[in-house]
Length: 336
Image (tube, rainbow, N blue to C red; front, side, top):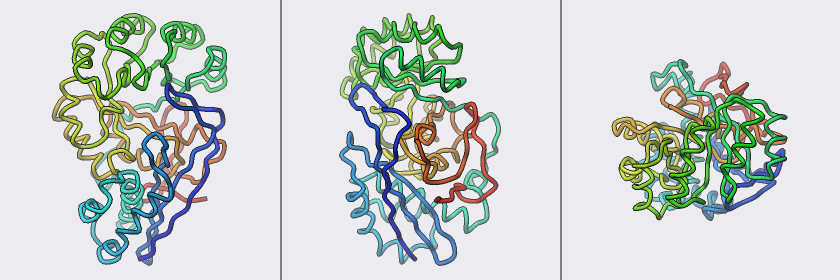
């Protein structure tokens, strides 16, 4: 067994802004794990908002290296359980490792992951393209430069409805809006009425995660579906979200990889929640892992690699919202 780490600084095409952050570069970690014949690749972005660094992820995974050497022939799910006691405090590290193990597992078995899980590439949701928070003029410019069937619009200002109203003048594409916890309950309820008229599909995380009582009021009164993001980090949050949200947005990095994400999807379906998987600012390594669960999803946000000046890997490609899969096994990733 061989374990390797590669760190990259991903450069974005344009400054990416949300209600609590702005960046031009994104640090990311690639984990490569080999069984002597095949090598699997996984990724997790070093997200400062969650206190995650590439050095911290590497140090965490190295603590599990002995377990990996002894159990490399086991399934990713079995290894996830064995390494969880070591990595539970660093789900981003566990995610990068879990994706790499899944990629390795698919290659060893000669199949793409989705086929290993009995899934078919039918009725796949279109991925949105994210328009970061900016001046209205710049947001309009981005829409004109990148025509797309579905946009996620980052919001979090006092003029959010006016922003959407102005953007709507320039495209008939579906809008999803993401306030990243910047609104109040009353603001969300009132905005939902106006945004529905502007062909907005749903609102993502309007309130901060600690406002559960207020979210119940929003859940009851909003005329648009409300999707949890920051309120749904891992498996324990799914049931809680089912009483105050209409759906959840699962991030592989936040929950610890494909292994728990698949369990969260199954649990959410039982609770009649809509299911979305979202991405961080990441390369095609992470994006190609998300693609494997596409047949299980209602919505997907996997535009991370599209926002980069230069990708560090090849894998799935996305054209006009549609995901195209390579004819290769595992996640289909090749590190460039």
